[in-house]
Image (cartoon, rainbow, N blue to C red):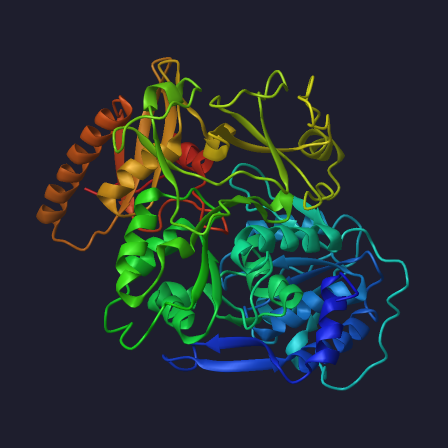
Length: 577
């Protein structure tokens, strides 16, 4: 393809393969078994060009266009239309009816959009957020599904100046107020090239013909936007997608869609693998074969070894190959992707001594006698270094430090935030090793180390628990608890009597009688206390059982530990039992 931008590639595909199916949205709200709605490459391109023309009646190049609509083909057209118009797209979720969405309000205030792209189904709710602020007029609202987008319009001149930023990917806000990451067209195409090189080494570092992307991830999240929308255009894949709600209602739908197409590629956070393995029956998979699944990416949140093993074991009888599972690391500030293990083989899991890991030193130990961590391979592009966050000097192998990243996928910075941009995207290494540039580097805020040439990740710097002077990684403690509880959990440190104490919050089902529930909770607390003591050498000051859905999470499903700690200190959790 001669034009490297997403919309440029779309135009060329519309010219070369106009009648091939580009996107299929499977609507499970209409029928339990799903109703497919499809667009060919030519149909999609025509609608995108028409919407871009319409957008220019309301916004100039460089203005922001917020996309907040139900997941479907209109969302795809809205996002691509903003790119084509040279308007900076801002993909967002749809606000819930009757509940004020603080995140959407914060993003609208930060991005100051000129226009909001939505659909008639939610225009009334969205309209409540379209208000004038900071001396700026209220943004116009365009209902994409009410426009005549199938009529041909004059194409916008591609040679006119465009903003460096193609779209703003707002962070999930797990540790701070959402910030708009400025993503350029080159960031996007470079990251796609890095993904295909690392995920398809056995196909010459490109995806094979007839590749199909299967996704239920939300388009407003970086992994969902790349997998379900951008990568299919850049790679010429058929994108088959549905909604997050359709997956959560019936996780088996994900596996069924994977089995229905050849050469499928998919991705999801760790929790989705738990749901799919636990809530997909043999009847759901009757007559289904997962032998055509090429790659299953696990990312967005910490990859749990036990979850991967359960998932692989559950679907092995349906011919899912364990080597298709690809634990992956990335972040929005790097567009999406940073590292995975290139070898086409089952995930590499290594055990490390927990005491030494807490002290910042990674030492391998015998099988199943330490903390299991999954390898993310030996990153080449983008470049990765482990750096001491205080001294800014590179860490030797086997020493824990902050993960720093450099490459064309590293984004331009944060929208209207010069100091955080400089702090995060403009880091320099002190006295770099031979072949290592001084800067600029992206500081990820994630802790990891290199062992035998491969990258391992232990958690977020801001989430480290310091108990009795030793560092503990909440992900490891939460993994231990989840093996017992089967639900979401949060490990936090709170100060009591001038000392940091470990508190564990656990989501549990509450469907038993009152007496049964008390007995189950007592047993759960005994098991959790014992497991944490044995695995991590820690005593638990408090175990709080809460109903399912009580723990605050980000838009991508990550636990918001800082919010959990604040709610605990303020006694805002409704304790079960």
